[in-house]
Image (tube, rainbow, N blue to C red):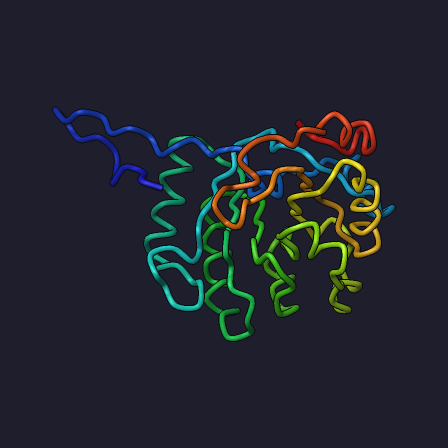
Length: 230
């Protein structure tokens, strides 16, 4: 992400801050839930929205690290810089590993991030159902990220029934407006209280479907109502 190496020194030109967190499902997933959202979540009503406070997104699989686990020292140093520049209140670990063997390293990372920022909202961006042990470490898990064609036939892992819906997020691209209600029903059936649906597509992996707001954002708001956070 190209953040500065450290604070400016005497007589030196101040470095540019790290790029501001962009609108992306990472930030949707880290929307801090207020009591209204939690109550709706436990009734099985999905909510969606843009984060209303600053959240830092980290690629936990960057720089060629094995099994998607980014270098610990570099990731924590980057977290320090985002805290210094933006006073972020949460962290999204993109491309988080899913296997049991990576649990200790992810637990170490999450524990350190929580020590840096009291009550930090932690989201693990697996994109699929991970080993159930990960649910003990984060506020939310992204258990689906992909296309509508895959989502409508997806299956939920049985272990998720042991946790409330507000622990799970689904990010689905390529959802046609005519299937928006169906997509919301799938989220409810699978117990995911946070969703980010968009009609944008990835064009075979050539574009980022989460880069801009969906064309039917107002439709999502009208269906979910106060469950939407902007």
